[in-house]
Length: 151
Image (tube, rainbow, N blue to C red; front, side, top):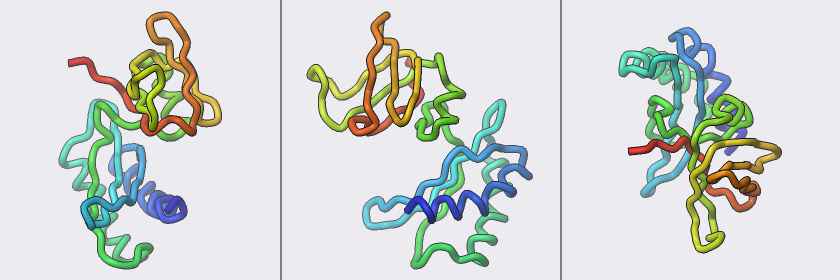
């Protein structure tokens, strides 16, 4: 799957940059029996529907031409979102010092969700400052890390 998303990212990157955006992530996932190819973009000041369209139309044509995916799928281009998932080392570097939520596969201390300030990221391990105490979560126990929005 990684090779497929890497191939799509390589096709998408020049189109995304030409639209004045940055490529945040590409995912290819199956949900409720349907495959989805999602391209997430970002832009300083936020992503508009026009930005998504400026990427979606030419990239859809390029994907049809290159045909990197066998079978049918639903193609989407959207903003990375305010509560975006952090997946790559560069994502963690950008949001060092930000408040994030870490979700675990299995409970630790009776909980699966932890919120704190992102202090570090190394080889997939995430360090949070939670109320002045450092908590380290290993790559193997982390299901998801994303920006945390207070409501």
